[in-house]
Amino acid sequence: MTQTLDTNNPSGPVTVGEIEVTIDRDACIGASACIPPADKTFTLDDDGKAVVMASASENNEADIIDAARACPVMAIKVTKNGQDMM
Ligand code: SF4
Image 1 (cartoon, rainbow, N blue to C red):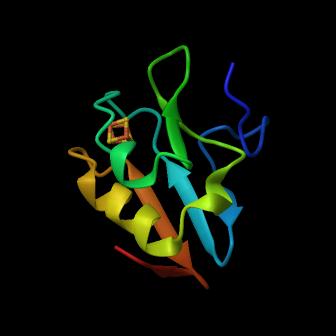
Image 2: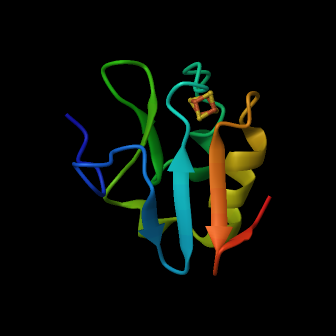
């Protein structure tokens, strides 16, 4: 079982450095496109939904934004100081 950054909110919202990451679990189709750009941040759980891993800080902000942009259904929301980073 993958260790998630926040076990109570495995798909966020969670804070990684200066950004906040949230995955819309209803929108997520498990396409995994988010994983290659930020493979320390995103993985799929047993339900096939993306979750944020405890190792997320090993990816930088740009990697996580690239991952969010790669999502075909725009299920990943990234904000910084309340501003949308997408
Ligand atoms: S790319 Fe989007 S749809 Fe695919 S697993 Fe990641 S969040 Fe879910």
